[in-house]
Image 1 (cartoon, rainbow, N blue to C red):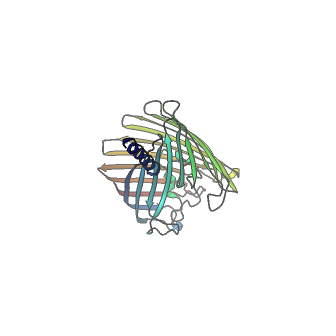
Image 2 (cartoon, rainbow, N blue to C red; image 1 turned 90 degrees about the horizontal axis):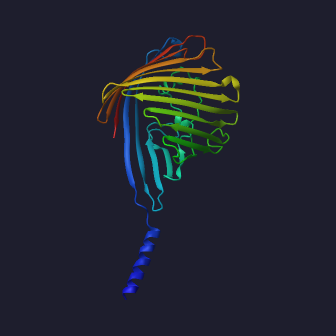
Image 3 (cartoon, one colour; image 1 turned 90 degrees about the vertical axis):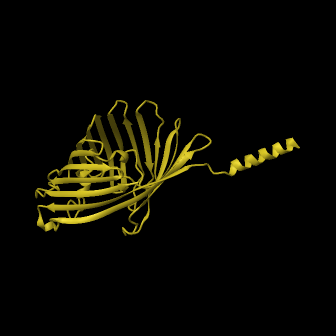
Length: 328
């Protein structure tokens, strides 16, 4: 009788294990911000002189995961953000989302359904924080001056190798063709980052940006940053070679940041945008200060663009902003 009970209990336990769901954890975080911004330009014809506006940004992030019985770790992430496919900023939808499987011995493998970063685009943010982005298509200002780096995209698969050398991370990514509205061929990318020396981070990446069949680009990015005490100096250089040589581009960026106290920091940045299609190269400068108290951050900054439209018209643009942000 006792043996029968033991066998029965063992079979029951086995059946429960085979149908159970592994226990994981779910975390929720988010942010909200309000920004006042002002653009001014030397050309009245742009209709952008003293162009003032208020804007708001909100997002909620869900992350969850846990360790399986076989030692693998599974992590899920998705984001609820403003906007929709129709462009209605008041209609929320799920934005970036991904699944990652990893282990210490096998490395990590991720699939990003939307908003994924390739091995190259993960390094695309410039040292100065992509100053040029704030001047793209702004009331007719710099509408054609867009740096075509290795973009984030949909359905990107990325594999990061397990650590073989302390401080060295190597990744490779693949995106199948046809993942954009314009079609396009498959894209691959490779990247590595080394942090083996205290305070120093060095990265290099190369890849493809084949968003459209007519415009295929090879993209390379180099980045270095060194932190010593409260001071951090960073430099990035990105270059893309297009099918049409006249549209080749290069972006150089340098930044210096200083942490004044636990709550207050300042940053200065400079970028140069070299586009073979331009008569002159646009140049950008930025200065910003941020104060953080708990989950609240107040940021103020001023930015400027010289030769903003890449022509000999000497168009200059100034951009100033004040942002109040909250994180939870």
